Length: 405
Image (cartoon, rainbow, N blue to C red; front, side, top):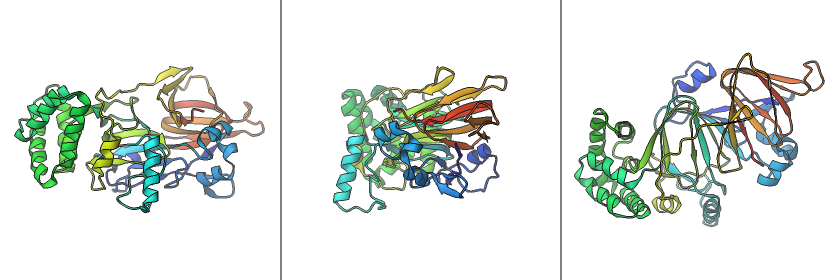
C-alpha cells in the first residue's frame, strides 16, 4: 500500500477554490482543474517505497503482475487500465464525444499511417483505446448528457422565438429521431460561423430571459445562457441545446459511453475512465473541431441522461457500469462502525473525500509482521496492489477505483 503524490492540472476551465477546499490548501488564485491519480504517462502519480519518489508508471512497468495481478494483466495488458481523477469545473468544458474501441483503433492507425504528429493540434486520436468514463458528484454538479427527445427539443427551441431556429424545429418534429438529430447537429456545426454567431447571440439572450420566468425548461435555459456567456457566438451553444441538461446531487453519477455527447458545466466530482486521451470536440472550445469525424462517431440516440445512484453490495456502494476497465464504489464509514475488510485480485486506488479513513494491510495484530497503516484525509489517496488484504476504519467517505477482471 502506497500513499500517492498526485499532479493537479491547471486547465483554464478549472475552479480556483474547489480543489483547495477539498485538499485543505490555500488557493493560489489560478485555476486548478483536475487531480490525476494513476499511471497515465501525462501525469503519473508518485510513490516512495524507501528509495525516494518514483512514478507509479515505473513501478508497474518493473513488475506488472506483482502490482496489477495476473487477472488484470491477462485482460488489459501490463498497464493500469484506468485513470482516476478529481475534477473541479469552474467554467464549462468542451462539448465532446469519445470513440468506441474499434473507432479508436482505426482512427489511431489511420493518423499514424498519414504521419500526423502525436502532439499535433489537429490530431484526433492520441492512442488506440476507447474512453468510457464515469463522473460522480461530490457537490451539486451541472452538466449535459445525451440527446433529448427531438419533440421536447423542438418545444424548447420554439419557445426561444428566434426565426432562424424554425427550420431546426420543423426537422425535429417531422423527421425520424436519428435522422432529425443528425440533420440538425450537422447543420449547426457546418454553418458559416460568422452567419450563425448572430443566431447564437439572439438565442442566448432569449434563453436568459426565459430562465428567469420559471417553467419546465428554466434550468436548461439558464445553463445554455452560461455556455453562451463563456463562448459567445459559438455554434456549440446551439448543439448543446439538443442535449439533456442534468443537475447531479452529491453521490449521483453519470456514465458516458462511446458516442454520447456531453459537457460538464460546473461542480466538483470524482471521475473514473479508461486510460485514454481520445476526445472529439463539437464546440465550446478554441481547440480543433473535426466535424466529419465527430459525426461519424456520435450516436444519434435520444433518451434521458441516465443518472446513476450507487447500489449497496455487502456494505460497499457500487456504481454499476457495462465495462470492465474500471469499477467505482464508495464506503461511507461511521465512527462506531466495525472495520471493513477489503481484498481484491486487481489493483485499487482509494481516495478519501470527507472525514478521516485509516487503511491497514497485513495481519490483524497491529504489531504483527508486514503491518502497514495509512491515514487519509480529504483529497488524499493510496495505491493498493493486487492481492493485498486491507481493513478500513474511521469516520469518512472513501471512493474506490478498481478493475473488473
